[in-house]
Image 1: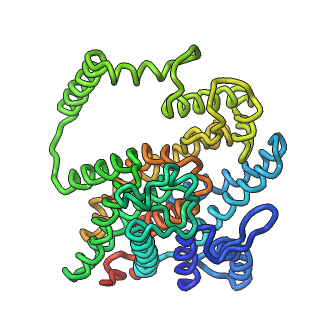
Image 2: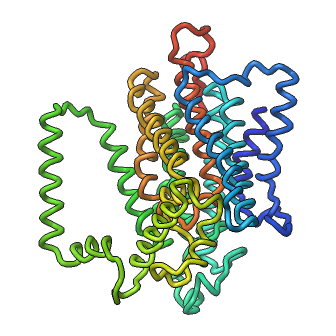
Image 3: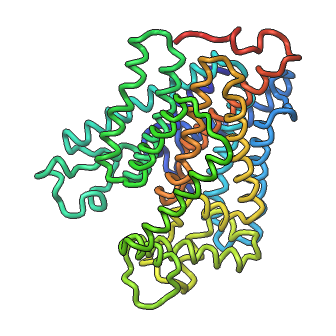
Length: 437
């Protein structure tokens, strides 16, 4: 099963253009075939009575997986009130692929050695896409990009410094978000390696990623990278702050923030735009994005909190005449996308699952062996920065690698919880399975 999981993780980084077959409804890719392959493999393993096919209710990771399964079931049910069947089918299909991948990683990654091997595959594919991005900048040769959208003013040929990397992704924001996920992977593998040369090798892509993210002109992802480093470095220092001290620091920070809003007109204008409800305000990109979010909340209320149905946010945006959006229909907000499309129940459960992962990684960071403490720190930093970073892409449902990445994160938490339970046999403990790359 390890080879299957390595192929699954590697293939998701190929995007939807390489090794793809076009159909009337969607594209069939290598990753999608492998993800669908989970179903027959799962049934076969049940027939073989595979002992790994169990849900340990004591593990928080199991509850997180249960939330994803419920999300998939709700997506199926939402077809009953979805306006457009084609959009509903495509989104539900993509969610099913993501949940199948998460289940495969959850069931069949049960030791740190296998988990580390699969992480190395993700790192290798990340390196290939980094080299691809550098190739695009250096040569101005784009294989899959639509240059009519990417190079609207036809300046790439004459000015190399304006070239934007995109590789196999739909746009540069999706590519930058993928590169952001590469930072915890590189830092984790470097921390688990005992060879200085390999540590340097694992960390080298991170330096190149910073340059490519800068060239992608994705401001939020660049800020997220900075925030990731700040959080990660903060973990390297032992903080002895009492609750009263934290309250004082938080109070001072809040006062400073309010003062900045009051005395800085540009920032005050940004905050004022958040409560815009109409009028002749200039439709900048930020205002359009906010209008998309406001429209979405109106749709949520119109659906009585059930959500408009999988994939049906865009039809609602096109067919309703609310706040102006310049014909843009994607939410550009992962959190509101879940809330508006799938309703309050799925959204609340997803937020609870997300917080549960953070809580478990945080509370167990000193319980795991020292070498794995860095894994907890990296995943905590990523989960925190992904909260703002996830509003960069137009539609995160379509970003297939993010399902696999979270599957790797959940499988690690599952391994960690199982390993730290003292009443289990000795071979499941971390120190019995540590393997140097």
